Image (cartoon, rainbow, N blue to C red; front, side):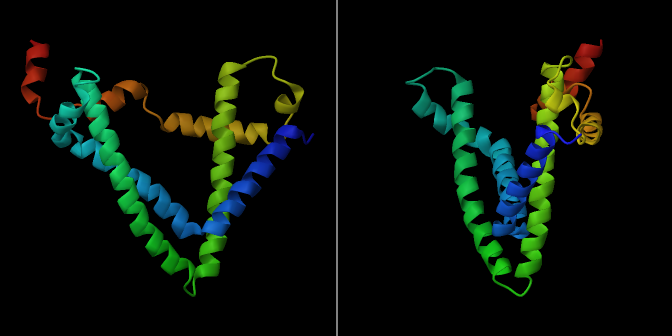
Length: 184
């Protein structure tokens, strides 16, 4: 039976698809790339800016962590603005070219997939929070088994301990001698 949940899925896919179609595939992809580049810039360069940030943050907090956060946030924002301006110019060139209609069509597909993924992630959280006694409009939705299958596939892609994996990646890699000390 088609339920309200199925309607929300279709509606979200259409809205996301139409918004992405208006912007175009290249702009959507370059927008995501801008955020990734800004995050990487913040990750790799915040330590070099942290001493300068500490001079400004010590009046608020004497914590080096606050200075690190301020440095990372500053780098992220500046990098995002710079990279976004560059990618906007590239995307404008593509949308205004002869491949503009193809770019917009691919944008719609990208947006529809993005909308579906948003519903998949939302359903994962909903199933986690309300594992039993779900409302009928969710439990009986025709799209629910397919979305749960996609969600299970996404969960399988995650590491067993995501928190440890992220922390390990953020730690400096120069501690080769530390491993020998902990093993002895």
